[in-house]
Amino acid sequence: MKYQQSILSFLNLKHNVSSNVNPEDVVGIRRLMIFVDVGYVRGNLKSIFYDDILDYSSFIDIATSQLILPHLFFDKIRIYYYDALPESPDPREKMQQLHIRKIKDTPGFEDVLGNLKKSKKMGQKQKGVDTQIAIDMLSKAYEDHYDIAVLIAGDEDFLPVVEAVKNTGKRVYGVYFESHISNDLKESFDRHLTLTRRWFAEAALKVQAIIPEFKLDNKIQKDMNINWNVKIEFSMIKGLVKLLIVDSSGIEYNNDYCYLLRHGQGTIHQESSIPLQFMIPSSNSLTGKCKAFVLVNDESNNIIAYRDSEVEII
Image 1 (cartoon, rainbow, N blue to C red):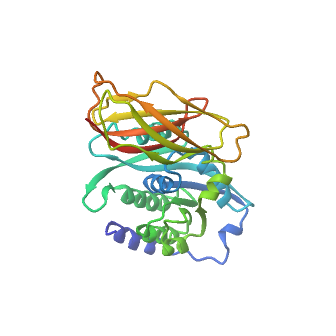
Image 2 (cartoon, rainbow, N blue to C red):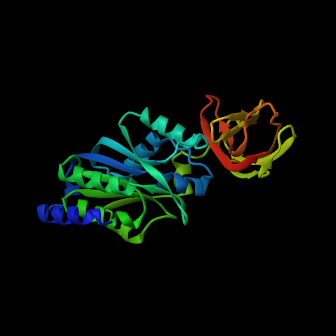
Image 3 (tube, rainbow, N blue to C red):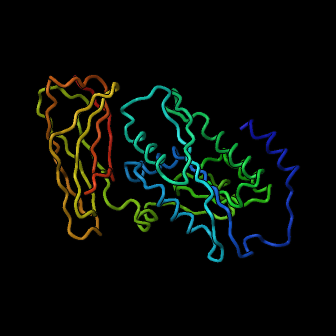
């Protein structure tokens, strides 16, 4: 990361901190700033739970409370949420747009958006997000905006940034997924928290429903009866399963019924295989390559799980 070198050298010269007192041994209030690589979080959530639905406010509260030592109090100054949008807005990226809208309504959060660039090797790749996280962490450390930075990320590219921030006398705590973390970055954190499937379950953040299987035909013909199977594991007392198909111009098809999930206790996951039966009428303008979503909504109509797949309407 070339942009870091001059900043790194400058900060190392200006802030060589030495002390015989461990700052973490001193009782008091610590100012926290939290830097979240949302693309990293979303990608890892989807690999574990098949969707990237997350209550970020509760997630941040639980994670920071587990990181901070018991004798310390903390003041969350601000939470920076870094994400990337496609260069050309695509209505099929409906879930990501809903996430960003929800984040904007959350007190204390500030969203910083980069762009998704097309890459032959990697499909869609974030552009500008890592750079912006690095600049913000370094500049705000130098300006003394925080005492502790909490970085939620796992790529090795962040290692020089973490070391530079620590050289200003600040602490850097890390939150990362067990399956996606650079060992060097992990060892550079002053304190760290490992995210696993069990951690999310114990934190009651991803326990209501997941969709491990969604079988469908790649091509759908209008005016034809379609039968898809979706496997859902759920622990909720009541929920609704819906189908949504969206094309690149924003035209939608919603199935005209909802399948009701019921479970008595809401504790142990119960598995159910649900047949989704529908027919897209020829009068519907939906056409071409589309994104199909199976959605699980709770009783308040909040989306708590989903799974998506590419389909083509012919």
